[in-house]
Amino acid sequence: IENYTMSKADRVNLVSKGFDSYFSKKYPYKNYSFITNGIDQEFISFFETEDTYSNSKSTGLNNLDRTLYILYAGNIGEGQGLHKILPEMSLTLKQDAVFTIVGNGSGLQALKKKIEDSNIKNIIIHPPVPRIQLVEFYSKADILFLHLNDYDAFKKVLPSKIFEYAATGLPILAGVDGYAKSFLEENVENSRIFTPCDAKKAVNEMYKLNLSFTKRKCFKKEFSRRKTSERLVSEVTELLYKDNN
Image 1 (cartoon, rainbow, N blue to C red):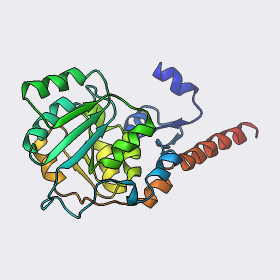
Image 2: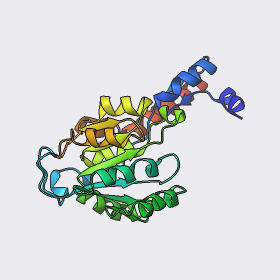
Image 3: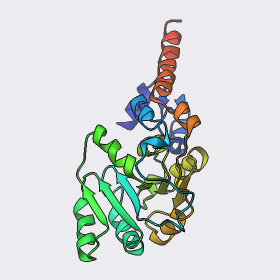
């Protein structure tokens, strides 16, 4: 199926440059582009200023005099491996942080079992909500959490959640490797990355974050849905022009 599809394609778009090494080696005769996921304008507009957030922000975590609110919003599957990281983190931070998980998926029961077995009180699980309600969760958060399981396949991907998280202006704590790691380091200010499934490193990196609103204007401009759509239109127009000539 892959060979047939690639043979018929005039151009191939890869949403993550992490896939480039595979495809360029296997199909070197193809033209490739790299148009990523984007951020919807209404989402960008909602998080335009720090006034969006209910928590008062400080510049660091070490002297924080209140409980941290750490939010994960998204799929809860084997790919995210939340059951391998959040229970241990929550026990380490039980006096300092509350984790709120908004989502559902095949890994939910494994996570719930770990929470129950360890009698964890500072992880709250909420079912999926519409975006209009999801932004309310974001507006109360101090840190946004992202995690991919420690599988080689995930070293090539670029999670779409990165774009939504970055648009909020909130600090991001991410357990990712490979291309997602380099993308965050190069493009998203006030994000800290730790080795997937390593709770100790996750907590250490968390304390290096600044609890401050980061505008990330360049990121939002570069990866807005309007911008990525314009790139796609340009790609298609170019192909049509070639076909007609």
